[in-house]
Length: 252
Image (cartoon, rainbow, N blue to C red; front, side, top):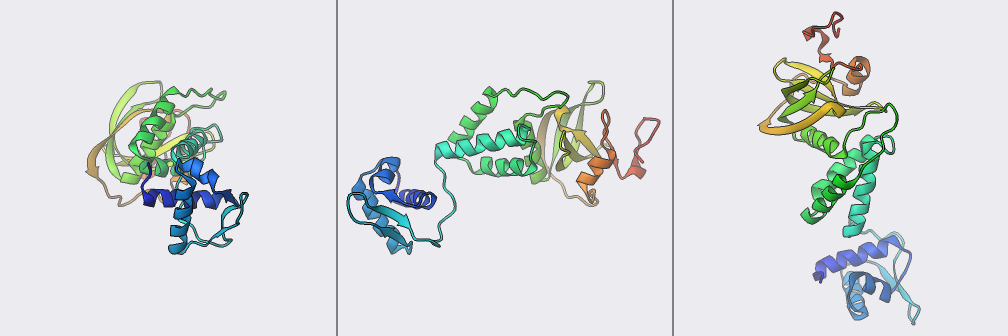
């Protein structure tokens, strides 16, 4: 049974998504009696919400046009539906949209633990058919990388370099960049003291170390850094003058 305050918020959110409701419809949605709905409508009016009503057996309730409502409060199933849709957009099914990833990260931070666990079960069960020639990144990994950038906290990264060789390095996460085909992770390679771009599909693990970092000279435009310097098979350095790469042609 919902508390009175939670029930009022749920009722006003229902009134906001349809032009009108009969008394029985919100009662059924919230699993309460019609008498409770009538009392809750009276409470909403006392709180200043303009709820109009039509008398009679076919009458109902509606919010007056222009009425301000509280922020969207989805129920469990609605929240999961939104999260699943954003997950698919972020993972590339709809082009790997950066805005979808950002929205998914924010949503997962505020979901109750029970919903976070259910979404984790869905992540584990979903299998997406890769598009030909396009590397795939798990949505969970994208969320980890985005959260690391948001926290500004040093992390230990397990990464597969060109040729499949495994490497482990400490990095200071900065930004995620999507080029339309691939995701790139822009971070400071602590040991080398250089800004690098890493293909997200080659990152196997990322573990925070608990050490906060402050950036003194980050790349001014991470997307431009990736578009100019990220090439298949190699990471790129920033600034180019600091490059110590072993290739015959340096990053600069």
